[in-house]
Amino acid sequence: MEALKTHLSQIHDKRGWLAVLGTLLLLCVAIPALNAGLPPDSALHVPDYVVTVLGKFMCFGIVALAMDLIWGFTGILSLGHGVFFALGGYAIGMHMMRDMAGEGVYRSDLPDFMVFLDWKELPWFWYGFDNFFFAILMALVVPGVLALGFGFLAFRSRIGGVYFSIITQAMTFAAMLWFFRNDTGFGGNNGLTDFKRLYGYSLAEPSTKLGLYTLSAGVLVLVYLLCRYVVTGRLGRILRAIRDHEGKVMFTGYNPLNYKLFVWTLSAVLCGLAGVLYVPQVGIINPSEMEPANSIEMAIWVAVGGRASLLGAPLGALIVNGSKSWFTASFPDYWLYFLGALFISVTLFFPKGIVGAVQDIWSKRKPAPGDDTTTSPSPALESEEAKQA
Image (cartoon, rainbow, N blue to C red; front, top):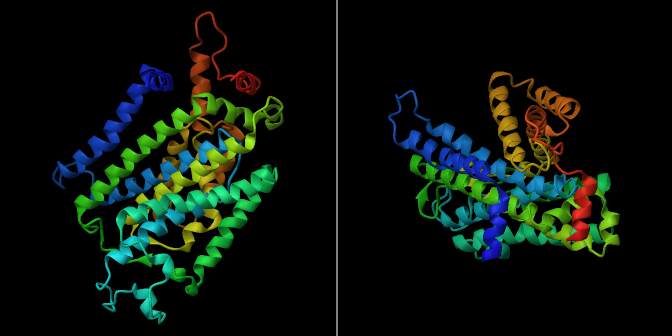
């Protein structure tokens, strides 16, 4: 217990903890209070639709943290995280479909799309999803098992770099094509929708939407702290050493396979958790969530915010998706051009992302007295730390 307390004290200094506390109060206290505590005609009132949009952004922030964990700190660029996100969404979607048995258009115990396709009985893989906790468990276990198996085969074969990115993209594309088929039992191209309630709470009620947002914000903060705990300890030093020079890590006696497999599986589980929170707020899950373009966009969130900073990951997700919401409403024909220009601009002018650029400016303006090492440790020093761990 004492070791845990000591390690947690090293995650942030006092200013860092104040920033985390301030963010927690803003997301989990201030916004809900401005939504539920003020009348709609108040200038400070946060409308219900804004709460829903912000709730989606919180889920994207969790995905961005998971992406930064595997890419920013371990150097493994995945272009297939969309499949883990979608699997978590399908798990909770299946539960909500089972929960509304007999209340659909056809008044059948089967989901409406199964009745339409002339299914006679519930497929075996739908069993158990009438239980909320079983669905939550599957939302975490299924992405984790898929990632564990896929990662073991890929990492054991020493597949890395652009080749790993390509096969992850192939994975999510294959999954998307499979889920698009009507005979797979997941709703085909229409997916799962028309949800009515979650754990007994009506999804149409503003209080439920506010509760889902608050839960998403709280989970985002907890996931951030979990990721900080991982990357600031010995494990984090080894992950950065693998990112910088995997061969040297092997030479010192470490087996990179185990560390890469752990962080890869953890990242997939976090994406599944984000999918669980996302689907009840948007009201639908379909195979389009597995499109390779969505996984590429997840990498863009991290690149814009700043790789290997953690704070930059959800910030990038907020900036990109906030801009997307505004551009798609104001200039729907030019959103993709803006996204491309944003990514190119960040790559050329802010290679460390927004957080990295701010840190560089701050370190130049306020150098430490009598110490010229104001920037982060070099990759060589980080690798050396891993040797000594």
